[in-house]
Length: 304
Length: 330
Image (tube, rainbow over all chains, first blue to last red; front, side):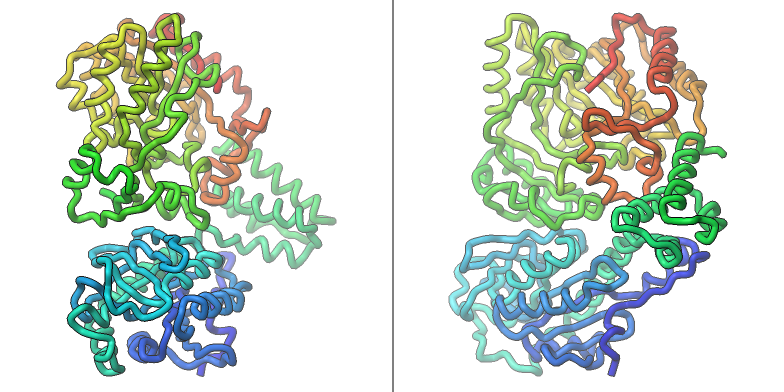
């Protein structure tokens, strides 16, 4: 069993490690949350991604050492939204700013064949009439479909769309914890006008998921890459922690420190930061002034 | 080319839309009610979206043509601007659009007829020749093969006695213009920065060399062409010599006396946009530079700006007459 705190990748980066080095190392991470409604969908994914049960009283929760987490939310849009909020809140203090969110599940479809995997390009709530449009940054060669979230199983399939019961609640809640580009929905067709919901069982769902496993893995990898890259851009340089632990900063001063250290990195003044000893400064204000002077000096005279 | 094409329900049946969609059968074509459902939504990341933007086909309602702010263009009379597109397919790091919009997707307003109607109304109320600027919220020509913008608008302006159109661009999509009769009422204004600046910060944009070749072909064909040197940004360590060499090269390729106009402009943008961009690109050297803020506008503080501008002007006047020149102060 993996312990709770490990579900969030805890990346320690050396102050001397290069940005490329950091990128290469963390590219192996999967800071992504998989959200499914039912154990019938969870089981093949647990096998596929080699997940282990995590300690959690509120929901069945699984994870692995790469940072991938799977939560079994229960059926329905509201339950799914609650599970997403629960997990998102639990991960709030992660060093990484954002995680990817991927809802995988089964759905009925008016036109598509059983077992067909589809990436959602539009997610509508039949109840509210509102829609989300997940940005198609990851579509690659995956077929896409509109997804309509309903409260009761849809057996008449009135539109050329996938019908299911979770995606809208999932998307709505996940966008509170991440940016919409990193929130995606993937559905596998489980029923259609020629094949009723009666035929759905664990064996057949596992077969369908296995059939789509390459697409799912690829989707997850691409999503993880984007998340890692995003977090890399926005990760605060290590010096912020270093300086904060040695001197007292007010909240405003902490913001100034963050931006100044970012500026100095962007201006190529890593050596200056490395050589700087917080012990040489009486207080935060003095350090901030030194950082500001250096940033302005380099900015106006970049060759020096 | 696009990650997806979103189509407002209201324009789905437009012939212009159907023709466009027929060209992209393999791209997901997704119906939406209004473009704002996608474009104005919260929880969007411009930087991520820019990797693979979508196209949104929409109808523009109201404010189709707006008065151009004072100091924007080459005409001191009342002039106007209009945007048949929002956002640009290029990815210039210094561009204010990154901070203005939440989404990096491109919106194409396909109701060209309504734009022309509105332009006509504005021409009617002006006593003098009126200038209409295109390319403020987008690049006028970059999406030409898809939008067929010049096919529709250039003949209209060519036939108007009292109106001038400026097409502001960095694009080399000039085929339709080369296949058309030049009009004195349509000015193609190409934007340039130093090649080192373009290489560093103008992503997906045709090279300075290709832009110059395109402009030369347009000038040879008889179109009025103009040069827009903005934003005037120096690459790290550059001196005025870099500008002198650049201007010498540019003006040796064109016929300077035939240029419609030449303008300069500094790096500047509203502070709010600048703050938004900082959150997107905290690691960007350009935004790590020292800035100054004046009346809510952010400027790069590179020594004495007036002195730099004066040197640039004096260098430009070695090649063009002062009456061809203006400085964009907006």
